[in-house]
Length: 125
Image (cartoon, rainbow, N blue to C red; front, top):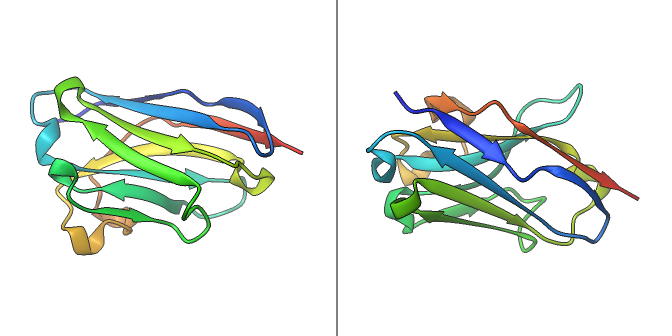
Protein backbone atom coordinates (compact mmCIF):
# COMPACT_ATOMS: atom_id res chain seq x y z
CA UNK A 1 0.00 0.00 0.00
CA UNK A 2 1.26 3.46 -0.93
CA UNK A 3 -0.10 6.76 0.26
CA UNK A 4 0.50 9.82 -1.87
CA UNK A 5 0.24 13.44 -0.74
CA UNK A 6 0.45 16.29 -3.23
CA UNK A 7 1.47 19.82 -2.36
CA UNK A 8 2.42 23.05 -4.08
CA UNK A 9 -0.79 23.97 -5.82
CA UNK A 10 -2.18 27.47 -5.77
CA UNK A 11 -3.10 30.54 -7.77
CA UNK A 12 -0.72 31.92 -10.34
CA UNK A 13 -0.96 34.35 -13.22
CA UNK A 14 -0.66 33.18 -16.80
CA UNK A 15 2.98 32.94 -17.79
CA UNK A 16 4.03 32.12 -14.27
CA UNK A 17 5.42 28.94 -12.73
CA UNK A 18 4.49 26.47 -10.03
CA UNK A 19 6.20 23.40 -8.66
CA UNK A 20 4.15 20.48 -7.40
CA UNK A 21 5.47 17.78 -5.11
CA UNK A 22 4.11 14.35 -4.32
CA UNK A 23 5.43 12.60 -1.24
CA UNK A 24 4.93 8.85 -0.98
CA UNK A 25 4.86 6.63 2.05
CA UNK A 26 6.49 3.22 2.21
CA UNK A 27 9.83 1.75 1.35
CA UNK A 28 9.07 0.64 -2.19
CA UNK A 29 8.79 4.03 -3.87
CA UNK A 30 11.66 3.27 -6.22
CA UNK A 31 9.78 0.31 -7.67
CA UNK A 32 6.89 2.43 -8.93
CA UNK A 33 6.43 4.48 -12.02
CA UNK A 34 4.98 7.87 -11.07
CA UNK A 35 2.53 9.98 -12.98
CA UNK A 36 0.74 13.30 -12.86
CA UNK A 37 -2.77 13.67 -14.16
CA UNK A 38 -5.22 16.55 -14.02
CA UNK A 39 -8.93 17.01 -14.13
CA UNK A 40 -10.83 20.19 -14.88
CA UNK A 41 -14.52 20.56 -14.04
CA UNK A 42 -16.69 18.64 -16.46
CA UNK A 43 -13.73 17.00 -18.17
CA UNK A 44 -12.09 13.59 -18.07
CA UNK A 45 -8.90 13.01 -16.17
CA UNK A 46 -6.04 13.94 -18.46
CA UNK A 47 -2.48 12.65 -18.60
CA UNK A 48 0.11 15.32 -17.81
CA UNK A 49 3.49 13.67 -17.24
CA UNK A 50 5.06 10.47 -16.00
CA UNK A 51 8.42 9.06 -15.09
CA UNK A 52 9.45 5.43 -15.00
CA UNK A 53 11.02 3.79 -12.00
CA UNK A 54 14.68 4.80 -11.85
CA UNK A 55 13.75 7.78 -14.03
CA UNK A 56 15.00 6.31 -17.28
CA UNK A 57 11.91 7.26 -19.24
CA UNK A 58 9.61 10.24 -19.15
CA UNK A 59 6.45 11.11 -21.02
CA UNK A 60 4.40 14.28 -21.38
CA UNK A 61 0.99 15.19 -22.58
CA UNK A 62 0.91 17.11 -25.83
CA UNK A 63 -0.54 20.21 -24.20
CA UNK A 64 2.31 20.53 -21.67
CA UNK A 65 5.26 19.39 -23.78
CA UNK A 66 8.12 21.85 -23.51
CA UNK A 67 6.57 23.67 -20.54
CA UNK A 68 6.45 21.02 -17.80
CA UNK A 69 9.17 18.76 -16.47
CA UNK A 70 8.97 15.78 -14.15
CA UNK A 71 11.63 14.42 -11.85
CA UNK A 72 11.92 12.07 -8.91
CA UNK A 73 14.09 11.78 -5.84
CA UNK A 74 13.93 8.21 -4.61
CA UNK A 75 15.91 9.08 -1.48
CA UNK A 76 13.08 11.42 -0.50
CA UNK A 77 10.22 9.29 -1.85
CA UNK A 78 9.10 12.32 -3.82
CA UNK A 79 8.16 13.12 -7.40
CA UNK A 80 8.06 16.68 -8.70
CA UNK A 81 6.25 18.48 -11.47
CA UNK A 82 7.74 21.78 -12.53
CA UNK A 83 5.23 23.82 -14.48
CA UNK A 84 6.44 26.82 -16.46
CA UNK A 85 4.70 29.28 -18.77
CA UNK A 86 1.36 28.34 -17.29
CA UNK A 87 -1.80 28.97 -19.27
CA UNK A 88 -5.37 29.43 -18.13
CA UNK A 89 -6.22 26.06 -19.66
CA UNK A 90 -3.82 24.42 -17.19
CA UNK A 91 -6.33 25.16 -14.44
CA UNK A 92 -7.36 21.85 -12.88
CA UNK A 93 -6.97 19.57 -9.91
CA UNK A 94 -3.64 17.81 -10.28
CA UNK A 95 -3.29 14.23 -9.07
CA UNK A 96 -0.21 12.18 -8.38
CA UNK A 97 -0.32 8.47 -9.16
CA UNK A 98 1.88 5.43 -8.61
CA UNK A 99 1.91 1.99 -10.12
CA UNK A 100 3.86 -0.88 -11.58
CA UNK A 101 3.56 0.62 -15.05
CA UNK A 102 5.55 -0.48 -18.04
CA UNK A 103 7.16 2.41 -19.89
CA UNK A 104 4.88 1.75 -22.85
CA UNK A 105 1.82 2.53 -20.73
CA UNK A 106 2.92 5.57 -18.73
CA UNK A 107 0.13 7.67 -20.28
CA UNK A 108 -2.65 5.26 -19.35
CA UNK A 109 -4.66 6.37 -16.34
CA UNK A 110 -5.97 2.85 -15.77
CA UNK A 111 -2.49 1.41 -15.21
CA UNK A 112 -1.88 3.28 -11.97
CA UNK A 113 -2.86 1.69 -8.69
CA UNK A 114 -2.49 4.48 -6.14
CA UNK A 115 -3.68 8.07 -6.23
CA UNK A 116 -3.27 11.16 -4.13
CA UNK A 117 -6.11 13.42 -3.05
CA UNK A 118 -5.23 16.12 -5.57
CA UNK A 119 -4.08 19.71 -5.39
CA UNK A 120 -5.77 22.65 -7.08
CA UNK A 121 -3.89 24.71 -9.63
CA UNK A 122 -5.58 27.87 -10.83
CA UNK A 123 -4.10 30.03 -13.56
CA UNK A 124 -5.59 33.48 -13.95
CA UNK A 125 -5.45 35.62 -17.08
